[in-house]
Length: 305
Image 1 (cartoon, rainbow, N blue to C red):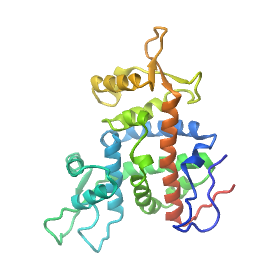
Image 2: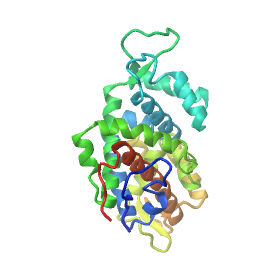
Image 3: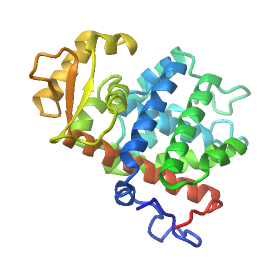
Image 4: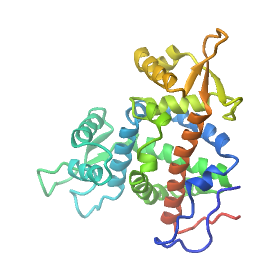
């Protein structure tokens, strides 16, 4: 069953055109998520610093919230956009992060020159409006395009082509999707196996890497096998061996990952439970992005049944 948009105008009070359950029923989902994960690995290679900074779920939440505030900025109000107070309010409204975590994240982005002060006069000297630098803008666009491409692979749509022709689609879509996702506990609070990775530093990258490695995510006797060298993994993502091993030990102790019993070095398995959790979690994100795109483009691209 393909991902299908309902015909007609999508009024706010009507059920969403796309649902996570509908996406989960798509027979192309697992294959498509592997392609998407490999694409995200390519994004990391292009923007390693940005990718590492948002590779824990909490920082991903903060980065999407901050970018939404940036895109919602009113040029006639110099103090709008990304400010510490606005980001903290966003986090209070969604429960995404504490005051200290949000403030530290902004400081980190400024230190790495991924945010900068907005030029021009400030009407309120106590407020410090910020904006993404060109590197951040490029990384967000690359991520957004990869997600539109993922949706297109599921249903044969042409969202990516639309974005390439009109980059303002990102401007209209991302804030809607960010607010949908941050208010949805199915996304903001990942399932157990996903959470083991997602809440840790660079854990999101590691989980996507795991999903990208096997030839297929179709299990054999409840397991998906893959080749993996933990030291090489740590080196590639510039994180400590200790962190990687501690993370994998926790996942192994919880039954989500295991090693081969035949003595083969570097041969691991993922449980079908972890794969299923990952697919369901990603389906929530994809449904939000698809619905946000539909709303932002006013159904400009209608998909055939």
